[in-house]
Length: 270
Image (tube, rainbow, N blue to C red; front, side):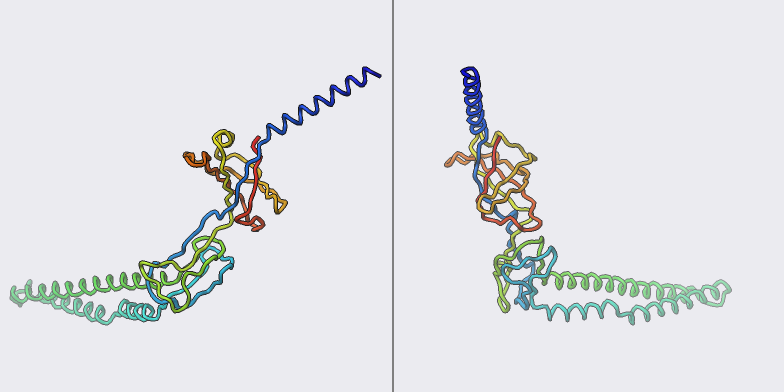
């Protein structure tokens, strides 16, 4: 009986020591979640906001239209450039003129070979062909410039529509309908990207030495009672002099949007 009690006591002591060791081995650090990216979406063009297509708090897809500036003048300029680019009257008449002068030159050349025309007439006909070809080349160059002008105006018109660079949530509408967007104040919408989500932990030197970039970790959301898999994406090379901590950032996939930004979270360092 005493022997059994002795071994039972030894087992209890060993179990207690293991629990204490495990508790000291696992170190919990606290952090918080934040948007993966905060984007101040700006307009490349200046002008009056004509329409806003989104509301604050609305989820948007990459490439979705957010707002558009007044574009009536640009549409008119684009139509004018298109008409000028497609105009073929001068081109056709000049080509006909070139063919006419070439025909006359060929005929005079034959007559000159037969001794029935003067060389001066042949030279004048050849000069007429060269002049007509010069006019044709000038028209072709002018049309090429008009095509470039058309493309330029089309790009300017397209840039008057502000689109979302990434999928995210609209947090702030900086400009509303009727307000002016200027080169010194081009921001129209503030957008946050929540997929992926970022968790930031401020660790001491020893704690940061236990993680490495690319390491798989588990982030626990205590208030929500959930946990998420994450990947260490950044370990700061600098230690904050005031707090003595090293920022470590974890990337968390958040396709379903179930993890919120701004929540407290924890991570076990083992």
